[in-house]
Image (cartoon, rainbow, N blue to C red):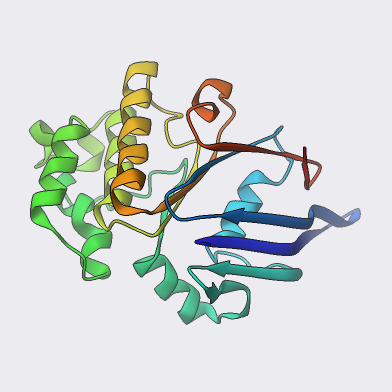
Length: 219
């Protein structure tokens, strides 16, 4: 399994007391598979993604990525995991303002020592970015910035892609093209995709769908 969650629970402290966000969640995702995580706002979807990425730690339970116990790692170990194994695509683009599109695309791949200029050029072409490679983030539209963020993640060919509404800032045609590219990468490399989405249409393109309701997975 590329991703495994066993009995994972998470709560946050609020002025009104502890707020349970996830309760005893079990989830498995194998190499080469894609999974859509659906549910209403506040159901715990983004929290689950953050835990899987090692951006936060669970209160209880075990999380493994590519056989490594993320839930037991220190900050340095989790950061290394995100550099080399896990690719993140969140709603915030988090592009580096001082780098042009070409440098942003290759940034994570260089950090993980997986830079492949030919693959990065292919990504730029397939994402419709080849003509803007020397522009900076502030010179791009929101949709272009989203495509750069997607390409930056795919450039390092991660084992696990965690995506939170990755096509939310794109029109339907561009969103479908990005989804096709991510699914093709999974087929080509054997990586896995866990995607949070509110779109039943996009969720239907993935291998499986799981719904979170009040922090629990429901059938």
